[in-house]
Image (cartoon, rainbow, N blue to C red; front, side, top):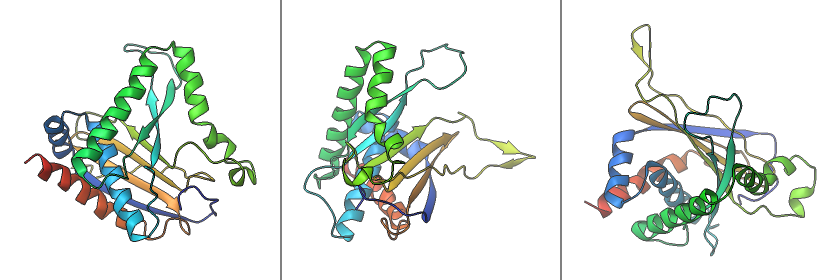
Amino acid sequence: MLNVSIGGARRFAAQTWSMARIKEAGKALGGTVNDVVLAMCGGALRTYLEEQNALPDKPLVAMCPVSIRAEGDQNAGNSITALLANLATDKPDPLERFSAIRDSVQAAKSVLSEMTPLQRMLVGALNGAPVLTGAVPGLVDRTAPAFNVIISNVPGPRTDMFWNGFEMDGCYPASIPIDGVALNITCTSSGSSMHFGLTGCRTSVPHLQRILAHLEDALTQLEESVA
């Protein structure tokens, strides 16, 4: 139900989580903040697709944009590539799912680390090609993308933000589903918070807001598994 042609109507759902919870879970599990974010998404999507009687036997794959900018690089413009991460939605156990996701991301990063910057950009172009070709009418019916969902984690300011003395409660990214990939999950951090923004095709991804509750459940399961 995710790799389908989409219409013009959208649903948007958003929620904020404590960065401390995510960091503590990652530390206890031997992973990173991004590993926990992907595990939350994998667990949430597994539950959501089970509710819709649409959980595939094979695990979902996420396309994740990642920065390849060298530390200290002050040049203008973006310098990114894209890796494909196994979301392990075929695994009911949250610990096994987390381990599979972490190993998948580490393997992808290991391959990228051995490439030149140009090679990384070419790999990103190939992995992200459906983002561009999705605009071609009818193409999605002939060529299935190599991934099922787009998940981005965009680092934001490391301190809490204020305006006229009032603290910012949320900063929710609204991104773009594409034809053939009906759901986009984008996260951004700010200070002590991680903000999730989910944008989906209204008809292809019904009851989008339920995924927010499943994200919380997935994080709680990870916390309980190492308690």
